[in-house]
Image (cartoon, rainbow, N blue to C red; front, side):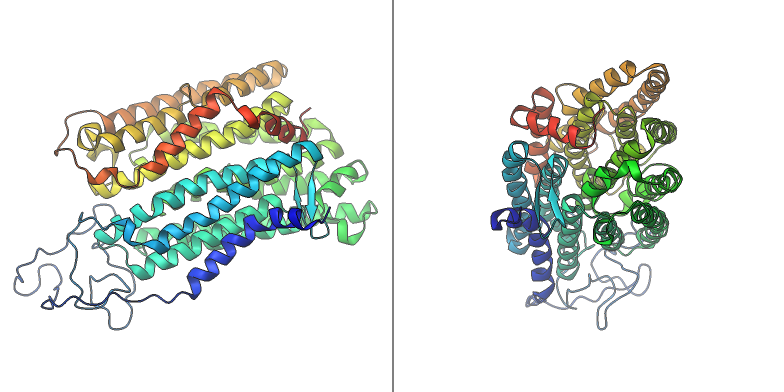
Length: 565
């Protein structure tokens, strides 16, 4: 089906963010007009006579001075953010910069709204008409694609809605400028385009290219602050994820080879529906090796062992809205690729192979995440290890593979994306408010910033699986499906629940330390800025836990599309 409306609905989710990125890239960055004030020359700390202005203090976490980058632009004064001219009056840390004065930042909401609109229109059509295709089958929307589009659009709306307030706080602290904010917007829009392409393409080769594109774009976002620790985290992310993507590439090549040997035409040898239809003719040995490499490769992007080490460093150093996108949807988009290959493997090899592979990886990842959460002292890294915990639960549900398990896994993807985006964006505001991400240095957040503390507490409660949030229903569904699947998977599910309780205790104890206790300062009103997207995310997560409503049919169809057995 190549009708124009269908082609528009399938193309727009990737094309509109790409056009937005191009528009940001082509828009010149204009330096602010210097105010008519006396030029104040900043001297290094402890050097020269006192100028009457307080010297900037080093960052508590990185040791870098506020706004100090690893490289300065020509003619830029030390201590001035790149893109701000010498002589521009420096703002004192904590001075608010109104996000309402940044219309270009709010323009970034157009892409998430378009993604949600296209996903909503497709959600109405696909369950009734079946999968829709465009551009000679290159783009294809089945129920799984539509579900993932809705998740990407919802999390992107939260992250992009939180972006202006976060960037305003960074500029007020001297860690960002107009130039860095412009670069941030370009990269975020390109990131959204790559993720949308990954979920709507039917070609496994294009899927690999799209996932690789997310690695390239997000590497620059992880190193956005250009401090020593952020650059180190970006390089670690690139090296580990590139190794994983290389494994996925080899696996894709092997699947292509098996398809060609089975008589599939060259132009359709990586087409997912064609591979599913001819899976029974694929060579078992080649398919087994190819699927193993693909699971390990895309598992690296999903935060699963053994190539998981990039995740806590990258999530802790990236800007908070970017961490929300990476944890909320990038991990899930990568795992949706594994779900596609799982259908091919089950048809070619039987269900036992992927069941053992995914269950083993899930338990190892969950055990590692639970152990590291017990020793964690940084609240952003704590949320990163929580992401590993939840991705392992999704992998366990995929190993079970029943309709209930897959429906619960998809519901878990949506609930985790909403809750984790709210948690990471709130964590970013906490870091700006307190100046540290060390859990031991933060006390009494509910007294100091009641609204922000309440949002963070509710987001963690959602991640812990408390009702009425969606993760309560999804974890209950995964447990029921696991115990009903047989003795082997029942034991794996029981072990997973014990590890989840361990992670539960660690998260609850550290969150209580942050929220409770005497407040060191009086309540502040600045923490209320930009909280509306977080409240929206929590409300949506609670709605999913109460009833899926009109999404019920789509959820069942999505579970059927990936072979609920």
